[in-house]
Length: 393
Image: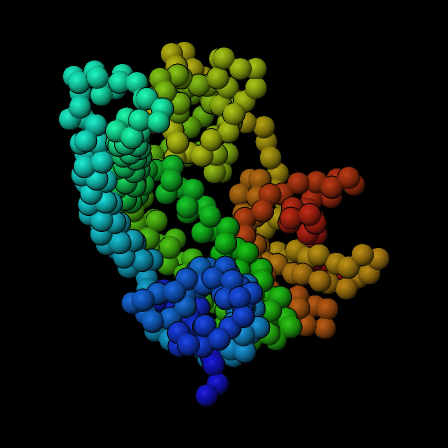
């Protein structure tokens, strides 16, 4: 029978199933290789990968042992269900660690009981040992054993503190207090958006090379990130969302971020606020979610904004061409604009002509507008500039 490795969607882990006898028949090096990439699960009667997202190493180990791809099994849990499972596991760990701690205390008391019973008997601690005297030597050995048990008792006490700390950590996990922290949720949302954008870029390349297997993998990963993103947004909404943004903060306002100190707002960006504390000569940048309070200082006046001209319009097409060639490599269509930026979405290119409104798979991106060295207006896109497409050229 062919040995196969399975991806369990429910746990997001790779599973290997083979008998105890088969494992024992492997070489010592092969057994060590398995243990580095897998843990044995008695509940699943299988070797389960340590990895949960990137399974490259686990799959390579499986292939080295003669396992082939057996596909997938089970249904992927929603991120909310994953969190519920984490809470259940944490709650069971709390009970287990507290029991371990109680047992360690009892062992400590037992180990130290002999020596504690001798407190007040100074002769026991100060009696000299007579060389060559059988009784005296026997007494010395007994005393050393009691001291040894006493010190082991301290080790057990330390174990009890260790298990109490583990139980406390599990309690924090079970309470899920991090989901009441605006800064934590805001950072996780940013991570999800970053991962989704990366998967979008990879999907475009996979589509261009017609790599359907890779596209399916990317779609699954993106689905997971979108699920997490919705979960974090819901949790953030439950605690009132992020209270401050570039629309309700102005340069010169005062904000409280760290402790009781008020810092002066220098600039309100799209995702972060730049502040100038009185105690340092430079500015600091923070996500809006970290702002605790805001106030407008007495006598504050808003500075007049400099006029900004954004020449791009909705439905304009911007392109990137090859170096020393007119070949169009990437094309985007403007779907929104502000004074300083445009929101673009990738479109199809046919016979070196961008196809307006024929959008490719991919999320829209917000990009800043600037001028190049020749004062041409361009759209800043990663390490490249996008120029307005002229169909007459």
